[in-house]
Image (tube, rainbow, N blue to C red):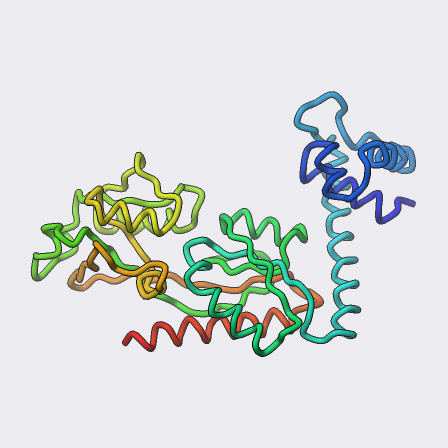
Length: 303
């Protein structure tokens, strides 16, 4: 029968598509990894990896076996985590994925509060594209993710946290800021900036543009909410920015103004996500509750 370590090597090869990087990820020498892969193929009687291709590709049966191997590796990690949790309680390091349209403006206060209450708990924060981080969560590279809804999958526990307003903003001297009342039809044809199309936030912005008949600018994609605010403030176009960002010290409303559009509003919903049945589910629930509490505190303090 295959060993767990051999299955871990196979998963590492599938994830990195490179023998050298897979060896580094698995903390083993490349010759050892290559030999163990050959041993695994001999034991199973099938070829798992296509040799001589760059990047490394799995054979069709290799892909199917890797999918099952990944589930086994994740389950074993959860067993180890469950044993550790029974010893240490709320402790350890949690790999936490967050969307860059929220994490930098909310998580510092959450982390500070968790450190005071649970000093042995550590959150390893990684920003990234929500769709990509959910895939990392499923394969065990992340433990928990904070992402915008909707999120699907019966293999995931989805904990809705809060809803925040989205605001259309313009440069402080933009003529739209002086128009009163400002109606939805006044936004028709107006240029709107957004993030890289891989971001869920880009899709939300595109939907808002379609609703208001505004013009989404594909040639001026921001890399962060800060870049959107700066470009909007310079007059390159309008931008959609979330409430928590506008209320944060890192964000703010310098050089821009919110547009008060009569009869129009937009929101987004955020959720904490972890694998269904994960060993640290109780700890994840505590983090989710702390995140929702901090978000509500910020929004209510500004009302």
